[in-house]
Image (cartoon, rainbow, N blue to C red):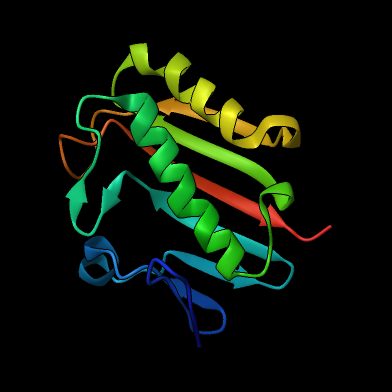
Length: 136
């Protein structure tokens, strides 16, 4: 098992961040499936607390950082990301979250889908992001 500087653990095909929702709902932060790393939805929750309340852009960047840490723990990199899915609770957040994705991935240009949802598990959460990476 390897452990990253932020406490994320790689236990083979499963990667865990120690987040409260992973334990409560029985899922892994990411799963390594052959040449793929599939990352569960990530929010701006750090050490059990929602960060950047009211700021969808900052929440998106935090969620992306958490997701990319899982990709790294799975043995791939930002450049291997092929898909980003994001969920926002307010229509006005599509553009700012899209800007955060553009900033985070630059020339990588993964496929991307944005969806508006009724809400997330905590009402302070404005965005949730999941990503998939594939070894080329």
